[in-house]
Image (cartoon, rainbow, N blue to C red; front, top):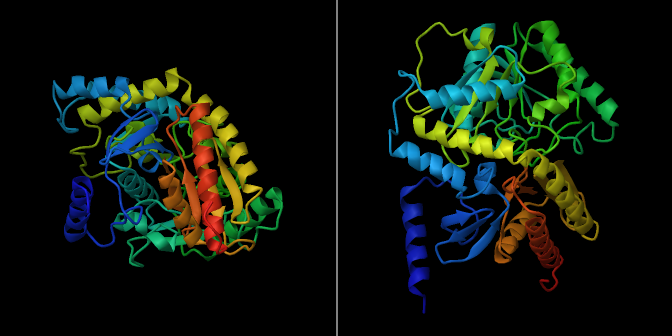
Length: 444
């Protein structure tokens, strides 16, 4: 006989399916409702505790229920929640000044949005207006959001439901290092081949190209990336043509990769990007995104424009407290140290499993690519099995990759060594369960 809690869960799931779109995906055969969190842990409606290794899609950047952020939001909520950009906002100016300094872009201006999708939309608006062209370069396997224009530059077919677009998008190689026609090359040869491909694509473009948009590490694509310096080599070509470089830092920003504060800094040899987009982690769960651009580019719009909700008093107050905590507690350094240990642990686990093809990523942005046991064939089934088994072992992780065969591991940046080991143990058990299941044996 079903318990009262199970009945309530079934009712909520039925209501969800009846009123929300069919294409709105949820994780797990039996989706869970998360009701509260603390630090790196969350609890569901049934009282089960999980170690959170996905952070609401890389959004809970510092910690769940971080007291400093909660206090800032509570204090601001007691004063005023909303004003819009038609009025001055001290918090928005304070946050913009700090982000402009951190961005590495000279003479930077900042515009706040409510999401990464909107940030990328704005970047595309700026680039196409500045360059008077609707031609945009993007990387294969990329993802930049779910709006009409963002889908138009998304190179991952799993997340692109329409071929209609206001933009003409030209896709170039470089997002995936270990698969595809250049996988066998050395890093230097890979970079040279991708640059040659870029030049070939530009030779076929009809007229002016506005910009290249690229994630330094592809998020939805399964935490894949090209070699360090690849985007710098691209920029040298772009600069010769006056083409702008947009770096999509929605997932790679704020020190998550450990070695750098921004993903573009692994490709800094040719200088900073022209436009940088951010979101997710800066708000720690608040609806916050934005664009940083050179003043010349940011100011190119000639029509009136405002934002009703972008940079609202409550989101900027929370983001300021969150960013201050991140910097003051050197969470970038923690991501480098604990992330390096976690990656080594995962590589050790993977060495004894035929189901794992590759462990990749950096800092606390780690991917595990899964295949049919003993083959090189991508396996979405394996990823689904591991996702479910990890949950049973008290661990929440994400999925990605165009075939849906990559695990995405991105816990809050305050993760401790003990919690990293706890997560690794749970993931090891889940991987062994999946391999045993796929081989037709008994679950471990």
